[in-house]
Image 1 (cartoon, rainbow, N blue to C red):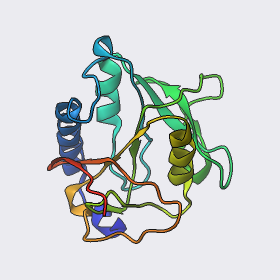
Image 2: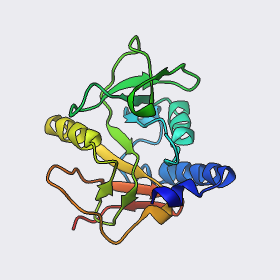
Image 3: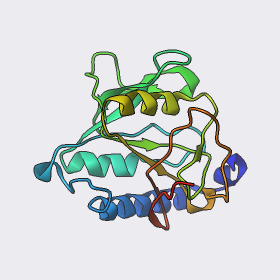
Amino acid sequence: MTKLRAGVDESTRRRVAERVKANFLNAMTEMGLPRDAAKGRAAFAGYWPKSSEFDPRALLRALDGRGFACALPVVVGRRQPLRFRRWCPGMALEPASFGLREPPETVPEISPDVILLPLLAFDSGGHRLGYGAGFYDRTLERLRQRRRVLAVGVAYAFQCVDAVPIAAGDQPLEWVVTDEGARRSVPS
């Protein structure tokens, strides 16, 4: 899957990012989310893409433009849940572990209601294959112990596979949004 993603040219990446943005925004009501901050509060966490990952920044900018609080993940340590710091378009980010970029320590942390997750592959049951470190699974487990948090995978449609291997502790996605549309996961 990494090789397939790496083969996507830059103009296709931008075009797909715009389609995913439109598909997400069109599905917000169906997901149970307010369409803008004036109609209800919600905080969104995304991620800064690395390598050939799907790039969610167009969607994050659109959510910020609708008045929603947006955040990026911060790696606290190995085997620790992620934390999320407020992010705004144009913000200077700092280099972080795993080749990531993070908001500076001076930026406040927020607790997201919706987390946009990167992935290598996904299936219709809401299972996601990541990089194997379990950061998002630990994070979702911790947050879901306190309240409802919506996990939404964002990806290229070609990343859908028949079945993703499931391990103990894996947290399901409620939705996946791709360039072909938004789909609610059907638990298997």
